[in-house]
Each structure stands twice: as C-alpha cells, then as structure tokens.
Image 1 (spheres, each protein chain N blue to C red):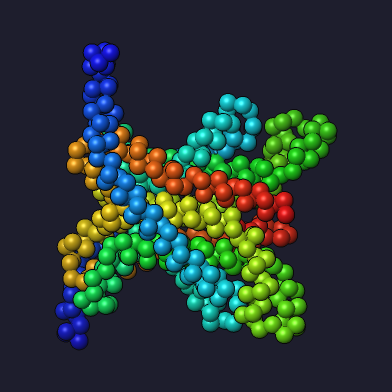
Image 2: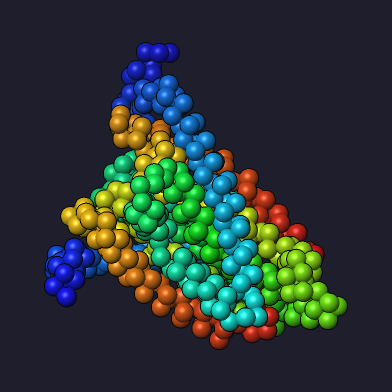
Length: 228
Length: 235
C-alpha cells in the first residue's frame, strides 16, 4: 500500500500544483474557444450570406475567402496572427481559429440556405411575402434545421483545435499539460498527465456531441442527410 | 530603379521587406524538403486512415453488438479529443510500451493522423453503408452471399458513390493536420517553415510561401470533392 502511495503517479496526483495548472489551462481553453465560436458564427453568417446572394463582386469576395482559408492549416493561421500581426498569445489563438472557422461556418450557412428549393421563394413571393418575410418565415426554418448539426460539430472541432495554440505558448490546457510534463518527467507521470487532459477534452466534447446528436434526431424529419 | 526601391520604406524594412524574400528564396530547399515530408506523411497517413476507417466503419454497421460497441468507442474517443494530444501520447507512450525501440517522428505522425482521420472515415463509411437500403443486404443474404461477401460485392460498391465526396474532404483535412508534426519537430513543411522563420525572423514571406504550398496541395483535392458532390447529387 505504501509503495503504491509513494509511486511517482500518486505523488503527482496528490500535488495541488497539477490541478491548479490544469484548471487555469482549461479556463483559457474555454475562453479562447468561446470567443472564437461567437466571432466566427457572426462572420461566418455574413460571409455565407454574401456567397449565397450570387451578386457579382460580393459573392466572389466571399467565395475567394472561403476557398483560400479552407485550404490552409490552422497552425499556420495562428502563427501568422502571432508573429506577423503581432497579437498577444490569447488573441493570436482566437483570431487564428476565427479566420478558419468563419470559412467553415460560411459554407454550412450557404449549404443550409441552398437546401431550400427555389420554388419555396417563388411560392412565398406569389403569396405577397416581402424578401425579409419569406426569408424569416419560409426559408430559414428548414434551413436552420439543416445547419445546426454541422455547426455544433464545428464547435467541438474549435475546442479541440484550440490546442494548436500551444505552438505559440498561449497557456491553454494542452500547453499547461506539456509544462507539467516537464515538471513531472517520469514516463508514468507524463502518460498520466496526457490521459487526464484527454479525459477533460473528452468530457466536454462528448457532452456537446451527444446533445448535438439528440438535436439532430429530434429535428431531422424524413431521411437523414449523408456525409456530415 | 534600384535607388527608387531603396527609398520605399516598406520594401526595405518591416515584415515583408525585400531582403527577407531574398533570404527565403535562397533557402527554398528547406521548404521543399519539408513539403516532401508532408506529402509522405499525408499519403501514408491516408492509406492507414482508409484501412482503419473501412474496418471500423464496417464494424459499426455490423449486426453484432461487440464490434459495434468497439467501433463506437474508437470513434467517440478519437473525434472528441484533440489530434495534438493523441500525437503526444503516441510520442511518449510507444517508446515505453515497446522498450528500447526507436520510432522516427515521421512514423508517429503517420500513426497519429491515420488513427485520428480513421475515426472520421469510419463515420463516412458507416453512413455510406447505411445509405444502401436494408433490403439490399437481405436480398444478397437470401441469395446465399455471406455477410462479408454481401458487403464486398453488393453494398460497398454502391456505397462508394455516396462516400467519395466526404472521403476527399477528409484527405484535405488530413494534409492540413499533418502540420501538428511541427510541434514534435517532425521535419514537415510547417516545421521547416517555422524553424526557418524563427531563426532569421523572416516570418512574413516564409508563412506566405508555406501557405501557398499547403494551398497547392489541398485546393485541387477540395475542387475534386466539390465535383464529386455535384455528380453524386445528379446521379
């Protein structure tokens, strides 16, 4: 029993420094993810709507943004925000994640709007609905049902990908973990730390994914969509 | 002309100054080497993720409980934890599990992205299999096909058309995600670019060129995915 209590892993697990470090990291991870999610939802809606309009310049600007950003690694975007734009760690992570996630959300918004048949617009117009009213009452309700599941799973991705901020030492959960793994350097301790961190990420993301799946089942009528 | 250039401030100083570009182009070899490593890791990682994804996807669509539960657990674990931590786990745990074995960082990268995207591909494969009506499987079984045979000859060929567009998108994500190798000094494009930029401070030009190289690798695949998507919709 004593041998177990004195094992390196138990010594580490009874040290409050571990929990303070991970707790601080977790808070920053949640903060970075939350701000990025809010910002990219706003910008993503704007860019997605711009592309949906099909107007000459506006939709081309939006399409170019989406096609360029989608094909770049997020680590690169975070590094650019930090070293080239000169933002402080936390904000470099937020901006890097936001630039990328905006493009993904924009595509989800556009895809959702496109899934509503043109006939619906025409029918609404023939019944005397204005543009805004047909959007609000006719087009958006079914489109939003299509958008919610992929948007929620993108939020999970943002939480996971906020770990990329460790490349600039922003101090989020993953980075704190590697710092602690430097303090507790024995292999068994290092593996325990990484297991703890994966458990934390898993608990948060699994909860969100489960809610999203329930939501999808509840919202989707008829045949399920494929490929999301 | 040269004098004129010397008088324009931002061409001589700042993050995108001309001398920085010259220094980068004199050292392009390191970036090319990095790009080759990225291509190698991405292609072998893709092979691994396709193999894992197909096996686990078939398991999760199976009629037996045990393989279904295993597949579920695999997918949930890999989809809900960051790739970075999985790579760190492999990096730290493998040398302990297999004592005294030296594993090149590139192999860790291949296993990392392979297992991570294997989970996503498994979901794609499952959706593909389930998109084929239950009656097809029953018809095949009634004609004397074994379960594996029915999958191999009846279900999978039909599911391919549904599965190809999201698979291509996964390949794009996989290429981008090989950049996590930079964190464990994997010698990939991101690492080559970041270490060159960090050594001399030529961040601006280096990141632009690194971005262009990633774009050149991903954009054709992304376009292909689009084309396959519209084709699948028509069919």
